[in-house]
Image (cartoon, rainbow, N blue to C red; front, side, top):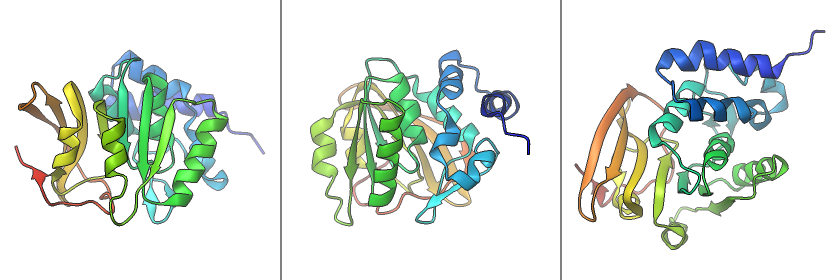
Length: 224
């Protein structure tokens, strides 16, 4: 049996899937080359780690398409000094990309087994700048999220029908927030930038459909 060359497969993913999707930022592309996506999927799915599909990770959750992950990285323009909030740890791969490019990441997940699994992988990969929060049905992580903020970058890895108010409140002036907003089949990948204490700029980047974040409160949603 011929062993799969993961470095070649990762490079081909970037050249064949990601660059054609208008991802040209060298910092984002270097991160995608550096972080081994195959380490964040189940053993039986490693050969599919670079495919243009949403891979299952358990709890009826999936990894985002590689091109979506790449667009997120390019959009938020991470700096090595950034404090980042990620909502939806999932497999931990997006967490690793964010941690690779920033000072620290606070990653929130509602499923304990996914959070624990991601934590183990990131620790084995040498990441020591990530804190993990476990949310529950009462949204108990909200106080801790605020305590670790405000944030330079916030990334929601699942869609929301409307953006909850708490996320814009926890964004620094000059901070960037990526969210996919709407309901299927009409969702928009959106970049929100806090330009002052009371003003926000909103840019619709592209249309897409991704799974919704679970346990997401919609009251006090942020309307533009």
